[in-house]
Image 1 (cartoon, helix red, strand yellow):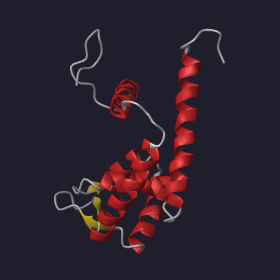
Image 2 (spheres, one colour):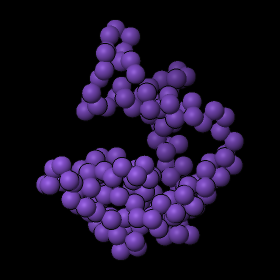
Image 3 (spheres, helix red, strand yellow):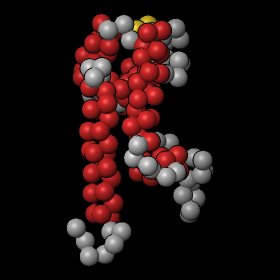
Image 4 (cartoon, one colour):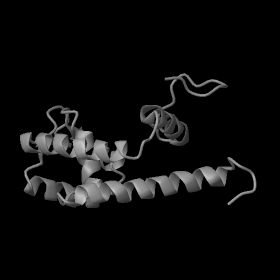
Length: 154
């Protein structure tokens, strides 16, 4: 793409290609259970047990609200997710994993982790952390904490 190694276009191309290939690989792992990548993202977010507002789930799953509603409806029909009115702000709806959803998430998480381990990625946690830091610097909607000339501190 560029004659200069490490050019911005190379970074964009590499990250895009890696995301597409990893999504394809994990999609094949999840397909046996009829779980899409988008559904997997929702299950992963809800796995913390705290329940999340649908607006937050929409952002984290990178899905428009209407598409997310249809997806969550399907997960509700499969008894993986349930929704409740937020006890503090009754205008909001929060989504949670059911007991079955927690079991399914744990089972699928093992399969996904095994598939990623087969790739032999060294220091995957460091890679995730570096990508997370990059996302934090690129996302204008994310609040910046204590930014100075060297960038935000976490």
